[in-house]
Image (cartoon, rainbow, N blue to C red; front, top):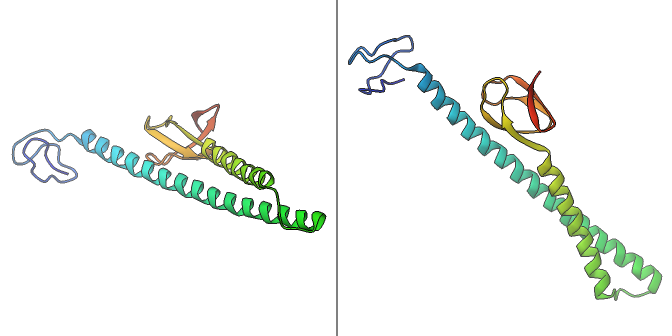
Amino acid sequence: MFCSKCGNELKENDIFCNKCGEKVVKEQQNNIEQKTNEIEYTETIKEQTNKKVGKTIFIGIIVTIILYVGFTGFWFLVNGTLDVPFAMKAIIIIIGIGLTLKEIMISMNNSYQGKCPYCDSNIRMIGEAGNCPICQKRIIVKDDKFYKV
């Protein structure tokens, strides 16, 4: 920790700077640490959300391929040819894309943003219960609001 007036390095228990006599403001240091934690936590949440969306898109592509291959196989059994009409192919691909988008929306709606009821920090949480990343106290989500446990 450093003096806000002269920049002199301070010890943890100092009340005044031993160089210029300025009163040590520890609250300012706590606010800086809290903002740093909030930024780090926000970046972690973004990474988790991006991974979740990427995973959902990958699964959606696999499901679309399985639908396409399955329908083509069914078409072959019924009609004896692999010549599936273009409209049928388009419908299968649209269904696969629709299912993928639905899953992405569900995964995005499972995250909540608001203020911690303990430390009043802006946080974002995935799921309906967890710990505040700043103060580490347990909180839950009900009706899109954070509550103490």
